[in-house]
Length: 231
Ligand code: ADP
Ligand code: ADP
Image (cartoon, rainbow, N blue to C red):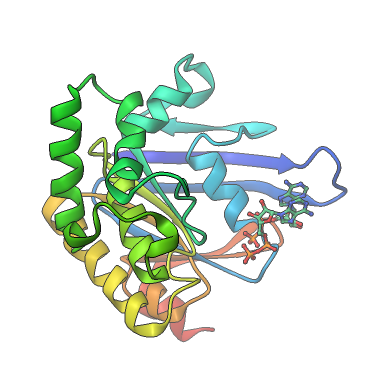
């Protein structure tokens, strides 16, 4: 019943005395939105990275549709096809235009012709309200526009799940609201699950569930309104 499930994961960084995660379990169901909150350094990004197969736990396991990620030999491909990533600092490639940036993950996805890739990129840019800027490079775009291009890129391979680390962290409130509205629409239209790391109560309140972490552990896991009320 879980799309993605972390089962008692532990993580200590090689150089660190800090144990970033000490036995965290967390699941995301199909179509569900979950917000992870907690003070800086409590392990939110580390957990997101383990769930997104960007890093491996020291012990414990992450399951995708019940299959352990540690047994997969095609992690890069798996990640590119099933998961979309959105980060606080967009990580767009500076020399590529918006439409080229959106196509980057498609090279790891199911094979498409150049024409099909271009068409898909255009339609994704339209979805995020950026078709008028398709030929612009990141430096020619406002920060709000960059995040919308990054969001279009995250959807390049029609993922079932979006992982977002402070997706509105660099945005003013107007652009943040626009990105959050887009995420809500995308979730509905595409039945996307969303796991978002955030300091923002506005972002957390829009999730189905809020998970609060502290010192590498889950402190609280419950419906959004209740969790935010106890801040
Ligand atoms: P935030 O709480 O806003 O996410 P952090 O300062 O905790 O900001 O971390 C931002 C990023 O920097 C993290 O995702 C992590 O990968 C990296 N980072 C944090 N602490 C360290 C560290 N001690 N050494 C190396 N990289 C770190
Ligand atoms: P958060 O996202 O909640 O701010 P992180 O997951 O980034 O927390 O960090 C958890 C702990 O792990 C922090 O103490 C941080 O300094 C440490 N850490 C994070 N990334 C690294 C890294 N690449 N190398 C060493 N320590 C790290």
